[in-house]
Length: 168
Figure (cartoon, rainbow, N blue to C red):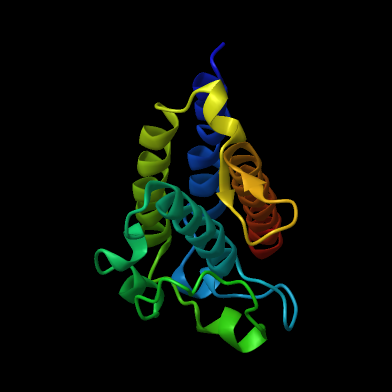
């Protein structure tokens, strides 16, 4: 198996998990917290998508999907490329208000499709290329992709758990 195929397989599991986490939830349920200060399903899915969009766009040297259309509006946000959810306090989490689950799925799908297209061109040699020198040690492409996948997997699992609490 080629490294690109492995990465496509791994990232390819996420869309069904994202859809499952938001399927049938109302806007109010997407914004509901299982307890005060907790993250919402809507915020978790928005955040995991924002992180993937931010990082993959950086790798491509292109604008983020989020700022290239009216995506931000569908979450009650402004199209700010730096607004990924990192550092959000409880008030900022509450301010992410998806209009519905379909908005989250559509945005995720657009980012996912771009990610898969990027991964199709990855070779084993590419994984050692340094993509971010702001860290010590510098971050390679392989480490960045694993980081995004890990972050997405954790957050979609959290979203599914919160969903379970809401619909029980």
